[in-house]
Amino acid sequence: MLSLEHLAELAERFREARAASVRPMRLEGRVLPFGQRPVLMGVINLSSDSWYRESVCLTAEAAIRRGRVLAAQGADLVDVGAESTLAHAARVDEALQQSRLLPVVRALAASGVLVSVETYSATVAGAALEAGARIINLTGISEADAVFEMVAAYDAAVILCYVQGPHVRAVGDFEFHDDVVGAMRDWFAALVDRAQQRGVEKILVDPGLGFYYRNLQDSAMRVRHQMQVFLQTFRLRTLGYPICHALPHAFEYFGEEVRCAEPFFAVLAALGGTDLFRTHEVPRVRAVLETLAVY
Image 1 (cartoon, rainbow, N blue to C red):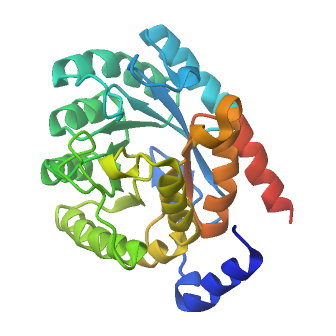
Image 2 (image 1 turned 60 degrees about the vertical axis):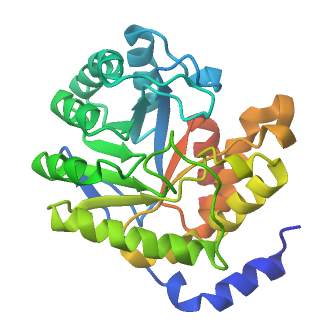
């Protein structure tokens, strides 16, 4: 059971890391106020394999409408993906991903919505940037260097996702370490250096808590891992960059109330020092974070 004693012990053990800060980020003439308030990323899924039905849009028109609604609800940016990360989901080739993504990206960017595209493909990333996306949510490292060069050329940003494998659709068992967050920090430090060497200045890091490793199918083990990382997120801020979290669902615990899961995990993420909250439930998570800010 999570307790005040546990939180106090974490705060004391990593006292120096708690002082780490991050700076706002400017993209497309607007400022994402990292370090000043929580930033919200809404989600659009263009794949029918995505199980979160509220975010699934099977036509460009529906996706464009949802993107505008998310912005009106308080999303600072919108993340669009054309291939589900679920282990059993169908693979979507690059041509089909582009045919789904690009009309949505163009329309949302033209209407003033800041767009992120989730992909591990350099080809898809390049097409998305040309269409107006200004953040690449990079869910793999197999083509990372090529993606970094394109991100730098567009003065865009990249979200570096922690993945034990070439990309999110090619993971096996999660390798635990004595200090999972410390191992993540070392991994990110090396990847950040690669990105910087290729001219990328605008970087976020994401611990990848929503990825489907084979040995994290046990719900109690998975949720325990997620909670521990959430509460130690502030340790990753010592890299100097904002931290993004995709809020999980814990369907086994929430059942029919699964839409309440992301707001619950948002509390843990906020306590741990998260900067960017990726959520399917923008109004609910926004209300939770604004309530926390009242204290």
